[in-house]
Length: 283
Length: 266
Image (tube, rainbow over all chains, first blue to last red; front, side):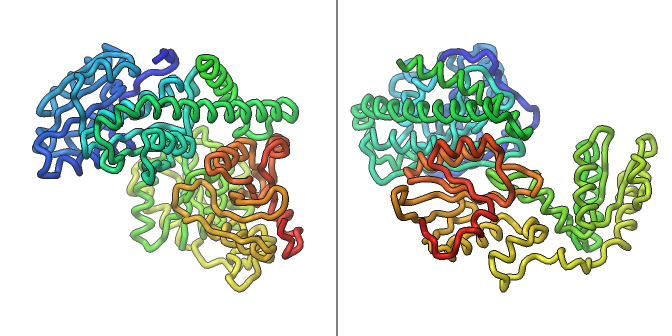
């Protein structure tokens, strides 16, 4: 994943962010099931381990003792910090892998799959050319009843050079195409929207059980799914670049009239760069 | 009796105590209801106009509180101003009911409740009434002051009625769903097909900007709809209008919509 220098992992002490709480509620359902003696949890782009903050309040000792936790991040210092936090939580096992997000499938043990995969507050940093790959790899790494939970913001505040955030409706188009590419029909993974005080967010949940394909079938169709989804992502970016240019043109001709439009103008300039860069990479 | 508390962030602790004290005395502290895509400033304006009393707790640099007091003054909502001794009271609000804050949160909260009591009487101002269901959607939306007190879903319902009166097939979208738009209509003619309708109940002073047009464009593309229709209680910025002209999004103010003769479908 090309680095976005403006971006850094945030850690709020003793605070559970609502999106993390939502992920943990899903995890709790799995931990409560007597069918699971251990629950494999892969936290992609774990950052400084924010999702673990306050976990002792959310999950009981018994629930935590069933977790086989694997954290993955590109930053060694962050990974170490997450490891330190995880080691104190009484998990069944803790493993940390450091690497580029695009390489996670190659760097994690080949046949290891996970009951729960989280990817929070990160999609805007993922190079759009790698997004389809990342999502497809994550789906392929789910156990038979595993769940993928992805959350991100629709707009980054303050804006980060090169970061490209997606809206809930765009993400629904992307994941629908991903399923279609895998040859899955009739399953439309849930994409919800969140309203925060200053910005909206979205979450995506893919349930492997509803995908309904074997590991072999998924792997066999992965390349097609990635390629077809990549085309859709490029189409979405082209549309957004066109709208971005049209709006900037309107601002150039008419000026901005409200403080909201002033903020919008700044974000559009960042978006113009992020989209131009991403579409340039795609070419 | 509804009480709206306008406050600076530094007064959060006092607000919590005050909310408890007011609730314990039988008052309803008006919540701000602004969902996804809603305009927070308009939601605040609507809540203030709907309140029976506004309690203002300005901080040292909280211009928003004075702005909200202005809305209350304009809507004839009584105001109780509460400030600490070391803070200057602007000359133009010095004659308002006032509580000097001591810093003892429980005591201050109780004192404010005591000051609220004589002011919290049902207002006789006919403009305070919401449009009755019996009123036509046109009448209800033409009464700007009352229309500003409508909730989002109430506003959407009236817009939906206006569209139906103009011959459109209208489908409501569940209010708390994911859709991101409020209504769907079917248009005939060259640009016919399924159109997504987004309703914006903004305060009269506010303008709907280009970002809202772009959001609707994104939905139109994602939903593979024929176009989008943005209907606002206020006006649009020039940039929003310019952007819409180049895209399959139409902009209508409530006045524009009312001006369309009933049964004109396309």
